[in-house]
Length: 256
Length: 66
Image (cartoon, rainbow over all chains, first blue to last red):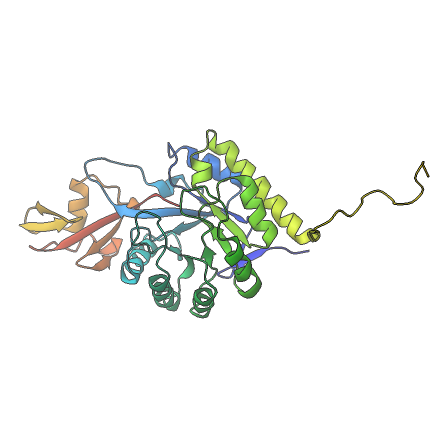
């Protein structure tokens, strides 16, 4: 059975997307990407600091990967649009993760501005993956605006608090036709597996891998978890019950 | 002449091209995107685009991010 994920007309082999933030050394990035099996890898955009020569992080992302720049730093749709256009000009593709945040405490996205940016960038031919707070109405508008997928947060970026928005994500998975990719807050492989069991199309993980004691090993753990969760979802999870339902027969006992 | 680079004022020689500026700053050309006065300047134009007083240059690169 073909269980491929298709985004922006492209078949994506792995349902684990990986962020490159917070790695203690750029050299860990290709190792973590390989261990994770991730095909989609995010990066950010910043001004060059001429006083501190730094490596181009994109050169650490394997060429077979799809580079997905995020618009982090943008506080408005227009700033996100500008960043996306700059990212595309780098010549590494036309995928973009829209990240519009004007809240430094919780890093919660601005859904309104995210929608505006999605409308503009989708019309310009970008493959747009908006990061947003799970809200069905907003998701429907994002889908209508041409988002290639929608990326609801599980809990605040870097918080490792898991799927706090679970109920809202379930609703999105049930109602939204484009892939629903849980992005932000997934803190452990079991949470990634849980998201996949719920029917998420993919998950995007960064902090939980990059800040693990052994990031490369953790990347592999996440890969296994995502595969297990997806397989479980496809295998058809049984229902839960309030009472016990015996596993061994209720007849032929050795006592009367 | 004075221009603004990445938000900071800077004195540069008159008639400097964008390519020359990046060279002076030892920036690897294929690791950056350049925006001049709000418009993206593609690489083929860097050598021919000369900077003028008051120009706003942004030199942007990919960094780690989630």
